Image 1 (cartoon, rainbow, N blue to C red):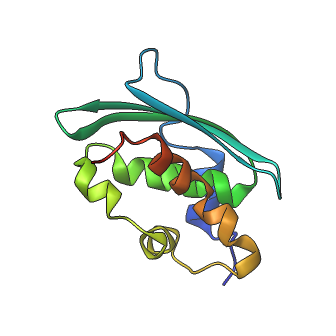
Image 2 (cartoon, rainbow, N blue to C red):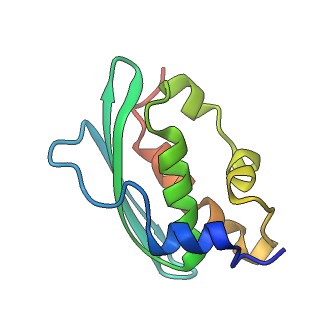
Length: 121
């Protein structure tokens, strides 16, 4: 499947929720040393839900688009629902399962969002 599908290019060119939150309740930085992707995730968690999410990312088209899609999907959801997300859910948002060499790019932002979530007991 071609990673340069129209909806992926649209999210890469016009990312949803890009930027930084002034006063995030949680944040995380992520780096993929294999390809150089970098991201910082800013979360505003209120009442067990993701009230707002922003991020700054430098990376390939796929990592930018996937993070945009994940942020759009997760915004407003209960943390319990976000925690249950997995790789298959991200691939469903993308509309395809990437090759093994592109899987890390597709999951990069998702893993960064998971890292920024509050610790669960």
